[in-house]
Length: 145
Image (cartoon, rainbow, N blue to C red; front, top):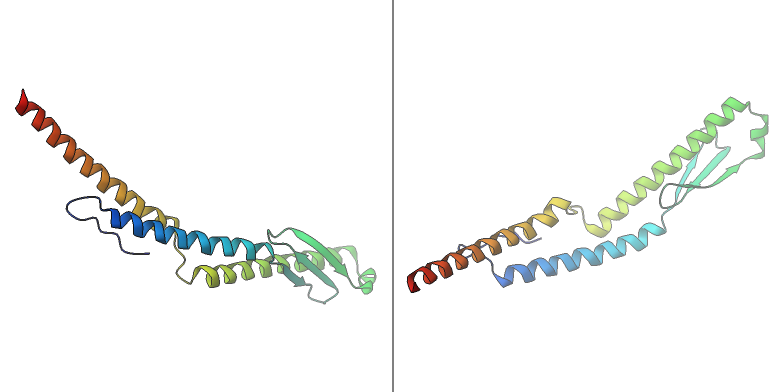
């Protein structure tokens, strides 16, 4: 993103065009990221390897696969293994999402503040420019009276 610095004369059209171009680039990268996010799955396995869990793009549990030997386990042990496998699958999905977003959006992905600040600065500069023009019109009207 370019460093926005309104000139002393106020709003400049070039500033708005650069902000619009930057916003379009961010929008395109976000669209790529959205499509790639839909395909992410997390995978996790229990400590003993007898339980495997799979999560979807949102972290929702999609599937659990149980090795037939889990039937030999007590219910508490099985519950702990299932919980661990699901947690690991969710963490794997989170890691994959974060890595993908860094790859698509860049390591210096812009914060909401960084996206909004230039627009606020443009708006302020534009308002100041309008205020100055309005003051000149009022002054001219007073001189005419």
